Image (cartoon, rainbow over all chains, first blue to last red; front, side, top):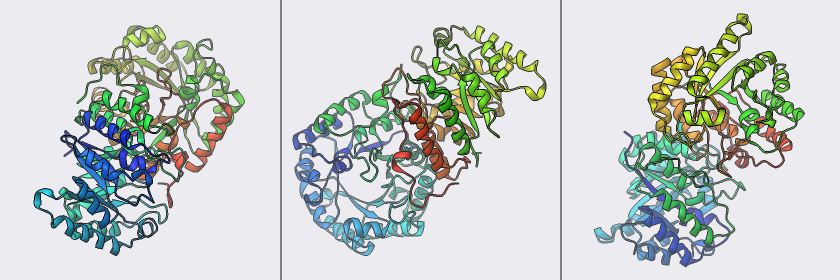
Length: 309
Length: 309
């Protein structure tokens, strides 16, 4: 059931950078993204089409997206909060558009000022926009179930609510739904349970990717649990960039280097050159000299006699 | 197959402290151990009966062992490198004696100046000593297969060699064999494979515990894999104490706080009060003001609405 190849979707340029106080210069972002792609990373979430007033770190997402599209073979993914963002994403040529829907309605209202109904209306409008394009120009449209393993405002969210959100996103026109552990509340059992439940509701082929965090150190264990359930796409961020703003010192995203090391050690192909990947930390650190990078494998180095899958 | 209850064996006072440059004062060690036991930790490896010249951090192991034996309900474990250490352990009243055997003979010769044959002779002598005691005074005797997932000198060790070591330790009189990822080379698949192979060779009831490291960040994922195989005893260290001396900044041991959080979140009982456990970090830090403590859960805090198993 588990795959012999997985897709590591690097989200550092989006989820990482948007959580940093300092802003990475556009030229260094481009250099970093092209270096990541050169290591064998096939999908990168390069930015977020949000208001530059809210997230000045993402102000150059249009330019970054257009640049990324010049990199051969790279799947260029972006996050959008609404129809306006989706239009900008399409104008820039993005291959994949992700609309996050917080299954915690409290969180949804506080964070993006949208009730579930309003968010679903946004999803429908985005879907209509995409359908209005010629078939070969339509980006892949994913709805992401955020706070799926719990919310810092509401705590655990009822599974029925989560499944309803998944169904509504699909009905609104999403091609696929993803599951996000925004708060790092997930554990291997809850990850497995929710993947099974969502797949039972919308179909196994409509949930292939997870976005897990490492806030409480369970990132790789949760990724392993998801992999055991047949998940093939894993979001992670180089150097674990994107510390959780509510927990100083706590890492947010799964560290790409450690995730790739885990899979390659297990004999699961990622297509990524781990030595080259670790070297790209220098570019990232140059672009963000004040940010702390995470990751154990880069510090310890690869095992003696290590062979990639 | 997986258990509803696991035993977390805290190895900080041994594997943690012996890898620190600074020496924790005896009185603070006692305070820390009694606090750990008060949190619900039922087994603690309190020290190592090695030469104080080699490891001055362990010079008070006799006193610490005798003190720990006064704590009601606590299983007091110690490491011994040879017969002399075992005699001291027995004199101090240890409940459990672990003799490490490096499956890498190169490592064994360089580290403890023993070939495999010599190490097995040591195991036999310890077993004879134990058998000479009245039945109710005999400590549990475990042989630990160290560098089981690879060695920094030899790389991967042939599985036939590891299984031969396991068989010989059992034949020498060990009650049980443990598997140790001394170097942090293991991955979830190799952990599962080796557990199955060792159990197929010496019997499932003769391998119930693993000692995994977090050197490359895979500690919890590997623990999850071992748990899925039916392992019930997991070594870990508070604050991940015991950084790998060959990799500055890289954590060695699995962080007890994160491991307990993982199991409790999964609904697997550890019997440990996680809030109280996290408070014992203060005592540890007081005893070792210069050491860096690891762990994500202590920084992030417990999830809203978190319930222990």
